[in-house]
Length: 193
Image 1 (cartoon, rainbow, N blue to C red):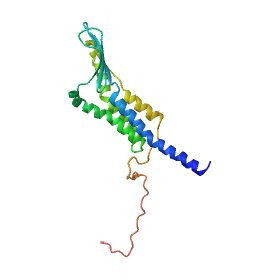
Image 2 (image 1 turned 90 degrees about the horizontal axis):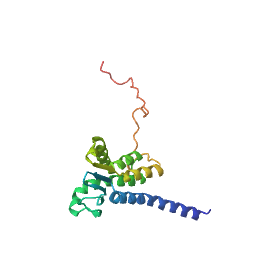
Image 3 (image 1 turned 30 degrees about the vertical axis):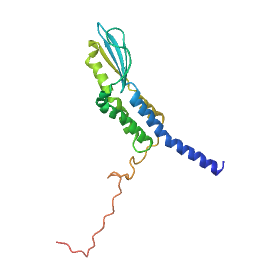
Image 4 (image 1 turned 180 degrees about the vertical axis):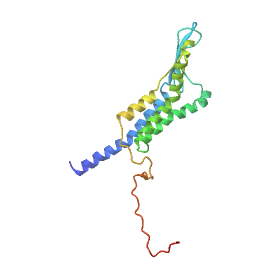
């Protein structure tokens, strides 16, 4: 293999490495915005309804009662109330993108993956333990963003940077530092006593 072939292979590998964080970030962004976050099941004596809820849409299926079945979008006035949840869904996108650019650690990216769906997981588990199921309402969280984030971090790890932030040097612990040699006092110095 000639030098020009080696250079073209290394250039293509570098371009692929630069595109990978963008690809993963784009997929995480799409999942964060469009994937369903939970399923609500309402089952009472006079009505049964299943609602699959996303950030900006919902699909409902009603077997009986006055409620409509079908796909609908969230009304624009509700976007303001969804903004905090949307910010939480962007945390995993940001951290996984930073991880694949070598600017943060895998542990922080894993923790950030939980943050996006953490509130919905917490509420769903809380409903299961408190027993809201007895009242005919079940909430099932759908942590697609967490699952995708864990799978990507597990299947495509990168070498951990020694310093996660640019411009910082690694400090040794006090017990790892070599002690400075002590200077002996010369006998010519005046002593107080």
